[in-house]
Image (cartoon, rainbow, N blue to C red; front, side):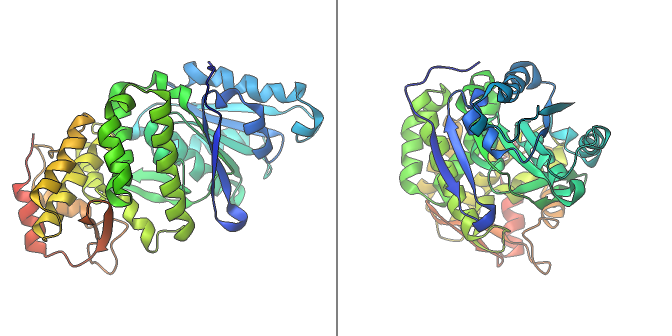
Length: 382
């Protein structure tokens, strides 16, 4: 499945002291021993993937790991053969539950895997989050590696150490912070990504421009066609810049006590949509897109954005084929009841990520309840 690319592999670092790790971005990384083998903790390897991804990439990854036997001695961890096992889970956000994680634990225990095992998450954000949580909790913490295969996972969920599962009352309410040993972003995997999933990933890319980097936002506006066409140079730059921003934020605030919350622009609204509609009916990026539109409109009502700014947000989201309206079935109280459970809330005060200007976000817990309810009542629905 590897491709011949004229672009070299690019690497950046998430700086967290002894928990620091690299993010490697390039074509063909799934079959690159040099970018995978150094991060194995021992000879036991459990690959976690799903029924959609496995037919495309599982065999290639297993061959890469098996190739350790033929590698130069300095590349291998020991002279012993790697013990490679796999867990193939169902696909979809609805499977992001403790019962799915229990299947991973069961497989680890059945195989007799010890504390020097390594879990490899091969898939999108759902697989990455569940694998990370299984790794964080198995024998009180074992190594894991992220190999994200969706754009959303490559630019967001695979970086930063957030792991966990959903609860019927709220998204990602059960979990832990547990950093991977490495993130391998193989851009070749995007060639099998459905257009809807690609658009969902672009929502998180656009988010970085809105909260952190106005120049990046302008670049995205000019290059959305190339990104939707998965042109290598454009997609590589978008991934790298997104990861750079997230790595910078995570290094400053690993456990989301402050600035890291800015990465949740649109998420409080979006998580409410996902939970209310049923996980998987709205993709995460789609729900975040509608949520970012809500945040932009509320920011304008507070006097920070003008109407041209709001229209600019709507235009780039629409150009990425993302929703800018809320579900017709959701009333204001449906939003509010879900939003009250948001993890960012402190002492029962609703904290929202809003935009002071395009390119600069803020955390606010002083939104007037009547103004918020009015926004949720009047916001367009389809």
